[in-house]
Amino acid sequence: MDLYNTLLVSLEMSESDRRLLMVLLVIFVVILLLAGFIGMLVRYLSNKMGERIETDIAEAVKYRIIENHKSAMKYGRRKNARLFFKAATPSMACLAFILVFWLIYSLCTLKNGGFGANHFANFNDLLFKFDATWEKDFLGFYKLMALSVKDYPTFVGGHWASYLIVTVFIIATVYLFVVSQAFLARAANLRRVVDEVYKNSLKGFNFFDETAKAAEQERQNKQ
Amino acid sequence: MGKFIKNFGLGLLYFIALPLLIVGVVCFAVYGIGEYLFYFFKGIVRFFKGDTFFEELPEDAKVKEIKRKLQEQAANPNPQPAPAQQTTTSNVSNQDNSQQSTYNVTNNYYGTPMGPQANVNPQFSNPNPRIDMNATEIDASYRNNAELSEPSFEEIGMNETPRIGTQGVPQIESIDLLDEEGK
Image (cartoon, rainbow over all chains, first blue to last red; front, side, top):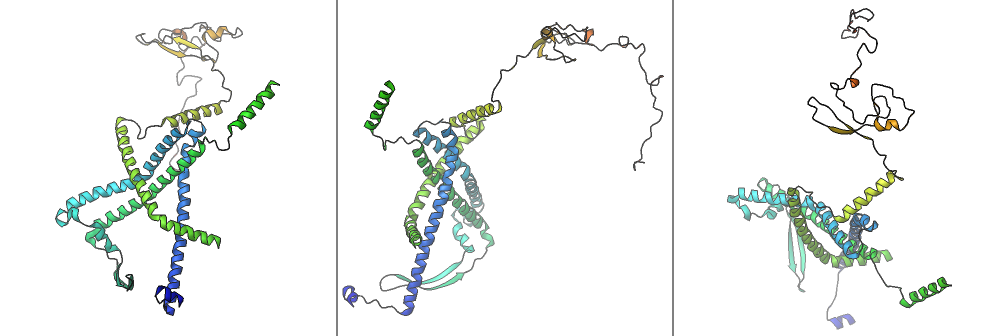
C-alpha cells in the first residue's frame, strides 16, 4: 500500500503473469551465463592464438639478435603481418573470386537487373520467414502478440548466383573476422611479451642502497 | 555459488562490451586488409623481379646463420685442420695436345702414393719400374706415352694371341635353351 501511495502505480499480476516473469528471468540469467562462458572461451582462444607470435620471435630474442624494445616491436609487427597474410589468403581469395564472379554475372544479366540485383534479398528464399504481430501497450512498449511461420525455405533456380555469392561472401567474411581477431590477439600478446622481456624497471631499486653496497664491497676488496 | 556469480558478472560484462569488441575487431580487420594489400602488391612486384614473395628479414637471416654454425659445431665438436691435398699438374694430351688440365692425384693404380709423396717414405718400392715415381707431370695420353698403355702379349710371356676355338680353350658346342615352362 505504501508503494502504491508513493508511485501511484498499482502492480497487480496474475499467476500466469508471475510465471511468465519467472521464465523470462531464468532466460535472462541463462543468456548472461552463456555470454560469460562464450566470453571466457573467446579469451582462452585469443590467448592461444596470441602465443603463436611468441614462438615466431623466440629465436631472435633468445640468440640476442634483438637488443631493445623498439626493434622487438618492429620485428614482431612484421612477423604478425606475415602471419596474418598467410592466414587471410584463403578468405581474400574467396572474396576476390566472388567479386570477379559478381562483375561477370552482372555484366551478363544487364537486361535482368544486372548490377542493381539485390542478391541478399534473393538469398532470403533459403531462410524461414516469420509473421509477427506486435501491439503497443499503454507504456509504449511493443508486445509480441502472435508469431507464426509465414514462408518455408524454397529453392528458386533463377537465384542460384545469389545463393553462391552470398554463401561464399558470408563464409569468407566470418573467416576473415576470426583471422582478424587472431591478428589482434597476437598484437596484444606481442606488446605484453616484449614489455616483459625488455623491461628496464627501477621498481625496488634504491640508489643509496646500491652505492652503499658497492662502497662496502670496495672496502672489503681493499682489505 | 561464487563461480556462478562470477560467470554471471562476466557474462554481463561481455554482453555490454560485445559491441565495443566487435568494433575493435572490425577496425583491426580493416587495418589488416590494408596491410594485406600492401604486402600483396609488394610481393607481386618482388615475385616478378625474380625474388621470393616475402623478403627475408635481417633478424631471420642472422638466426639462420647462428643455427647453421651451431649445427656445424654439433657435427664437428673438435674440428681438425683439413689435410693439405697433393696437387699434381698433368698435361693431358688430346689429339691436338692443346688442352691442359689440373687435377688432384692421391693414389695411383697400385694404391701407393704418387709424385713427390713417393720420396717421403723411402721404404716404398716402386712396383712398376716403367712409371717414374718422382715425376710431377704425367703425360696421360696412350698415343704419346707407351708406358701407360697395356702391356703387349710378348711382354707377359704369350707368343700368340689367344683365339676362340684354338686348343686349350674350352669351346662351346651347343647351347640348351629352356622352353617357356622352364624344362
